[in-house]
Image 1 (cartoon, rainbow, N blue to C red):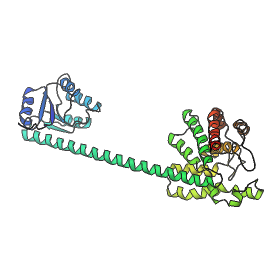
Image 2: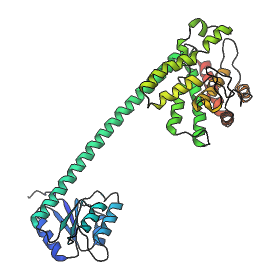
Image 3: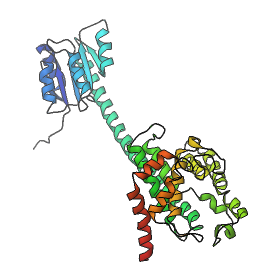
Image 4: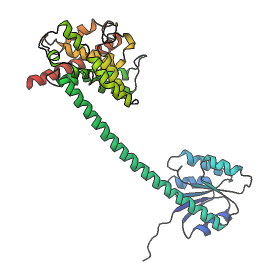
Length: 366
């Protein structure tokens, strides 16, 4: 029994039967040639079938080869089929126009059978090579995506570990970081959903703020234990030492930012670390900047940090109920905090309270 050998499908479109017969007799031994006398019938065939190559006459009644080429190029499933234009024009205008429209080659009529076979073989080999390259590119892209995903995961784990290490010097658990990150996420998502002049950000910028909030207190790593862990109110001198933690944190990040200038997360973290104790009215520290001179990420982090401090127990104060903490935030609108961001918080009191209460319930269960 004879083995069925696949032959590449070649469409040939020409209104001249003599040309069609010539192409058929030349290519039929090696290829599955499908002849059509009009562009309409060829396109109808392609609506339900495919082809490896199209031989297309440029001068046909009703629908010219250029018209067919436009339809092919406009269809994502057909535009990659290589097209060889058949033309009787010797002035070169048709050839140039066809190539500009996406044809891969052209052949002057009348043509020698050897020329036709050579052009067809060349285009089929090139198409095979292009598809091979596409597969390689797809495989490399997938591999790069896998590697990038692994690096992103590793960076996120490293970030979380670094944030937890700095947080656990100052708190019994790492829940402060989880809560402040949660509060910042609520504010960021609101800003993304409600674009407002002065508060517009991309999703990437918003995610950077959320992630960088975790590092807001990294400078406390440099604080002496007898001050940071003191079970009681700080003296004025001790408080002055604590007030340097944004400076120490910024110094830690500045070197990394210089080495990775295009890393938006590090730049955002630097802004937040340096600015989360600044105040809207300019009475904050360490630089005393005010208003929108303070980065948006730092303004968001300031609200998250203070709300968590208010609703958490400290050696020198009880944990205030969320309702009382909200009132204490709101009275500082326009003074300590960005008034627009306070307006955002007012829209999400329920979510803030849920985060504050959830961790307390977990602590009670433990």
